[in-house]
Amino acid sequence: MKGYRIMFFTQENRTIHGDTVGQWILQRARKLGAAGGTMTAGGEGFGHEGKIHSAGFFEMADRPMTVSVVTDEPTCEALMAAIAGENIDVFYCRSEVEFGRLGGDRSDSTG
Image (tube, rainbow, N blue to C red; front, side):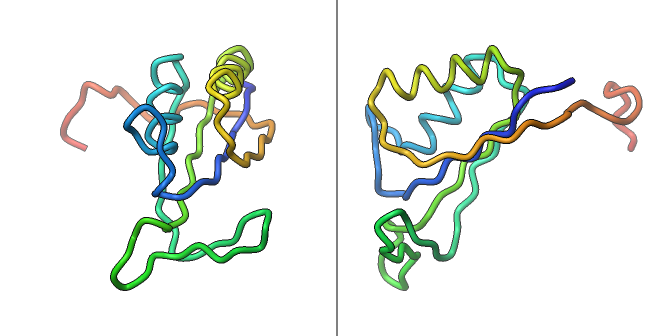
């Protein structure tokens, strides 16, 4: 299947409606029917202003987070519209990808 991989870059201390921005994006992508998504914590990064964000020894709040979502075009557009509608300030990159599943019968729990 053809679609998109969208990567969103944020920090752990950024929130919306009681969730981190990363959690909100991941949950919204799931509700919209995205093929899959993963949120990953980073050790260190920098943003558009050049400020270093890192997981400090005593403070994890500024830790960089990446949310990666793979989906078809209509769901991608719906997710981008939802983020824009909430006025979430988040950096992203979107790439065209081919995605699918490989492997046998998923009901077989032996392997």
